[in-house]
Length: 220
Image (tube, rainbow, N blue to C red):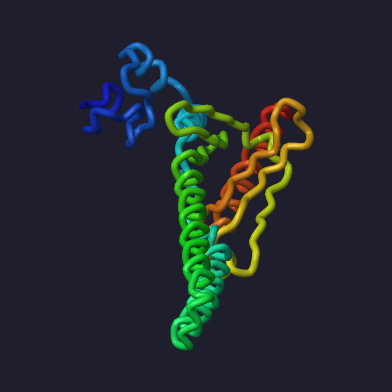
């Protein structure tokens, strides 16, 4: 594609010329009018066009709860399994036939607990999905049917990260985006995501950018 204003070659999917900054598809008359503007006016127009392009909402991050968020449960279940296994071996080694039923019951209990934990992990991973754009936070809930909750980042006043000691070791945790000043939006909780500190900073920085931009517009 050729720019009608400066003649530069640009890609077909571009909205603006990367050389002169003019909008693609504008008429020759408009291009001539732009050439009659002063250099300062042309520069201001180009800055406005760049800002308009930057304002398009884009995806920053997307993820689901991590199985690592259940690390403390897996560690506890592993410890319980080791205790049950030791008791089972002792009962079997000493040929305590009257207590063998207890040993089998312990193994059955452990496998049931493991199955319940596995189902809980899979349910959370398959029914929760999070997405952050430059303007909004989305939380999708459900597997077959979907419910989507969204919050404007400009409404977020504070962002918190919650981690227990094992979650810190696995670099997972919960991120809470608080919107106390807006009665229409509830606080948004991202459960068990990886790298929660980075996600928290991403939300905080974009929320601050949007508030600063809104304040600048109000002053104009």
